[in-house]
Length: 220
Ligand SMILES: C[S@@+](CC[C@H](N)C(=O)[O-])C[C@H]1O[C@@H](n2cnc3c(N)ncnc32)[C@H](O)[C@@H]1O
Image (cartoon, rainbow, N blue to C red):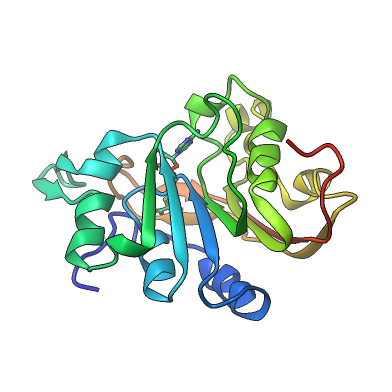
């Protein structure tokens, strides 16, 4: 790629998700990315041949802006839309500029859905985590794949917010028509400063991947 996401170097379980897609869905399947940001996952998915629906609420992530880098220098950050054009991948990606929790659930069916560290954002705390998960599940066709990596609690305040969750707690949302394929977790680890986090900081991350076995009975 000629361009780089601002989050390019942060830890991710995305390679496990991509490997699962290769095993389970068609090479030209549609994958929805919730919280697409500036395209860290959207661009590799499109480059791999998938059609992507990229849902993002943040205008800066989509359209770019002048930003302050760690160390206090300024830079112009490209947004998702310009990155897609520069990498000539825009024809494979539909960008939806919206809050995933606003309005009725998207009437869209995909072969897979992915999110990375999005639901713990404070903008989502006014709604139960179950709603975020349910809206993601509704996007997945029978036989399709659900993948989410997420922040686990580290600080005391995180333990009061259900959106900082764990693979064990998340599993309860995957009874019935879902097979949990893989759960993973990290220990606490230190991440170097990046945009939005000017100092070294500590994270703990989890992953849950599941396959939908049949049509949900209470669907839509
Ligand atoms: C931390 S970023 C994920 C990027 C990736 N982990 C990385 O390292 O680049 C999460 C993104 O989810 C988006 N997001 C969170 N809640 C959302 C919602 N309800 N609707 C749409 N986008 C959302 C945020 O705006 C943010 O761009």
